[in-house]
Structures are given as structure tokens and as C-alpha cells.
Image (tube, rainbow, N blue to C red):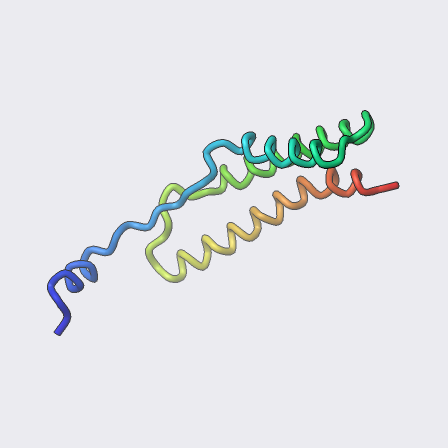
Length: 106
């Protein structure tokens, strides 16, 4: 027989929560600053990095806006949420891709 504490946990599982990054600009600024420090870019490269920074902030915003306030409690609901999250990640990648590929073009 399960211990009373385990039985109580089974009856009242903790509510799942979703979390999204609180400060997207801080994450993207750090990455761009690190690249800038390592590469010492010329003005053209700085402009490309600025475009990448803007696209990255936009992509993080897309991901943040898609974060649900509460996770579904049913398996089919969680599966639907996963599919939605993958679609959102694809949109975020499509937002950053043009800026990231232009910086690698000759």
C-alpha cells in the first residue's frame, strides 16, 4: 500500500506551469555583444549584427507570446500544445533565418 503522502500527491498533483523568458532583449544582447567582442566587426558586419539582433528579439517575442499561461492536463491537450509550440518555434526560426544567412553571405 502506498504511503499517505504518495496517495495525497496522486489525488492532488501539482499544477503544471509554463514559463517564458522574462527579458528577451537581455539574452539577445548578450549573444550579439559576445560575437562583437570576439570578431571585432567592421561597419557592414555591425549593421548585419544589428539586423540579427532585431530579428532575434522578434523571434523571442514570438516564442514568449505563444507560452501558455497554464499547461493542459490531458495527454491530448499536451500533445496539441507541443504541436503548437513546434509551429511557433518554426515561425521564430523563419524570423531569424534571413538575418542570420545574410551575415554569412560573401
